[in-house]
Image 1 (cartoon, helix red, strand yellow):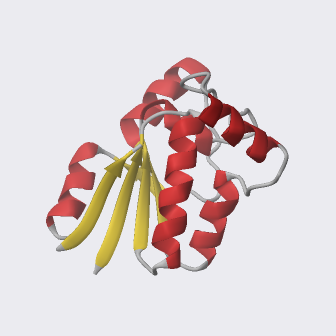
Image 2 (tube, helix red, strand yellow):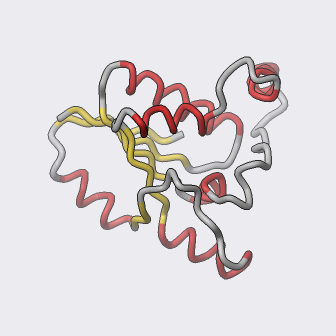
Amino acid sequence: MKKTIIFVTKYTVESLYSMQALLTGASNTEVDTEIIFNGASVLAMTKQFYNKFPKADSENEYTKIIMDVWSNGEFPDWLKVMTVAKQADRLKVYLCQPCIEIFQKKLGKLDLLDIVDGKVNGVEVFNKLKNEQDFLFVTV
């Protein structure tokens, strides 16, 4: 089975746009995809933080253009693209369990978005990978 696993490690415009582009390509070629949010990116999958616009890694022209088209609605935001892939049964979304626990210690209870399928730790991720024969592993 062909599968793409995308690790999202930052809650930034650049990471979320890259994830969105990869997911769009995978969905259009009927490749199943798993997205694992790790580090600060797990906050993007919580009700408390989803509506906060992600920060930019840099102030370059590329980032400004992406922020502009997202805010003007000229391009679907990353959560809409994920929702379409979920509805087509092509996407599973996981959050890093240890990261969620760390943020909850500091921020209190975090309400996860409905799109989240579950939480995983590093051992579970690599156990999944060792059984796959044909996959692409990408970090953004």
